[in-house]
Length: 287
Image 1 (cartoon, one colour):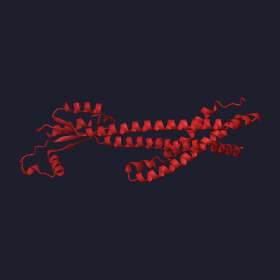
Image 2 (image 1 turned 30 degrees about the vertical axis):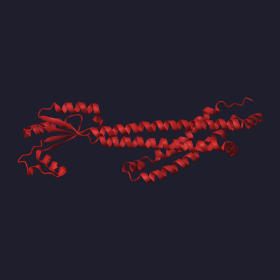
Image 3 (image 1 turned 135 degrees about the horizontal axis):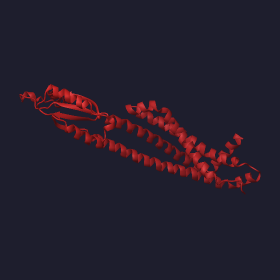
Image 4 (image 1 turned 60 degrees about the horizontal axis):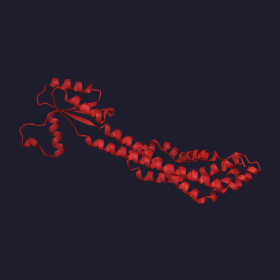
């Protein structure tokens, strides 16, 4: 019986070659876009987490404070719910950092150190959003002996916004191409049914079961999805080889390869099966 189904499916493919090829190509593009959308979302989450985990706020202190004030403020900052870690930067250390970063030693001109001492507060990732940061800055500014609070990582939110925008566009493109693929599968099945209507009517007259008519048509779509899966996997392997130089992508490929293979080889058949069942439900044994 399986041989019969395969033979009938092959006859269906030959009767609608152009639609079969178009469906295979469309499914391949859909699978690849869905796959790379998934990878893009993973990358965005990876980089978003990396960026958010490096957000720091500089809390500059007033000129005169005691060692007791320093220890008290350190304890207070460490106790804040939004503090991941706190580092104290003394005036001398601030001067060393300035010289290292700029290459200019102001100490050769000035006989005093104008740079203030400060605390560097690393913010927990869960508080790394604009609303929380505004409240955090206000809270830090209200602490006694704090002269100024400076947040220098505003560009991070621009990067995060760019990433989110890209994700939206990729999702929309993927959705559009997937809808096109679904329509082409539907059109192919309808074309097969119309082109073989005489054969189907003859099969009904000789007492063929409904499954004898439907299964070959479904197999036609599944064969197209099989080809699309193979093509998608070959394209994926090629692109993977080119992108392994990016550390984050290399990590994800090693961790989520099984998920990627499932997307590549299951997306097409699932789409085809759903569309086929929906389309063929109108096919009956009525003559």
